[in-house]
Image (cartoon, rainbow, N blue to C red):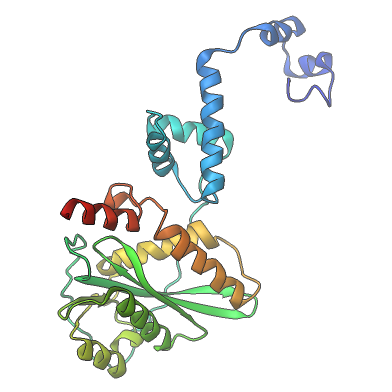
Length: 284
């Protein structure tokens, strides 16, 4: 009633809602409780956090940010305040498979075996490809993550599902990280990874190739999870106006937000770069 006083009279609203005017005025005069004032202030802080990350966080990460800022608060309370204020994260979108495994190239063995916890950098990289819709047509995004910190160490975009993006993403990752021989490179059975050219590239680098079992997305769950996160937090139902716009948005998401700022539950709610810096500091 208070919010609608500019549009309707108190008398009319009281009649429609079957409440007394005296009760409404008594409520107006009643002092706001400390808990209510505190919730109002927390909602403002939550709104500020979500605006800064473009509404990409759910309640666990918002809770962690509030705690970092010195506010001891429970996740359930944060989730309730987010619902009440309309500050929830973007809903997830259905995932579309882009793997073309119906080829004649022999697959590599699944050497990773779902062992997604790695204690040293540049020991295990995982890779996958997904699609991005634009008004000019599809774009395909290939990423390579280091399982040690979940950091995206290499990525590339292409207009086709060929192996070009995979080679360019690998080239970026090698220049940035200078990995040792013996690195385990895991992917699905897509033709881009199974091709003779890509196998030869891995062999020349001294890498060991590993592939998921046929039709088992859980064998490459970390790469799949990254794409689901990207689709939720960046793209949603959006169709970019151009491939250039898509490339700019994905660059900002990966290089500015995901690697540097996004809190990752697997590494103690640190960003990938924070985690690597923290480990390096501990080792000194």
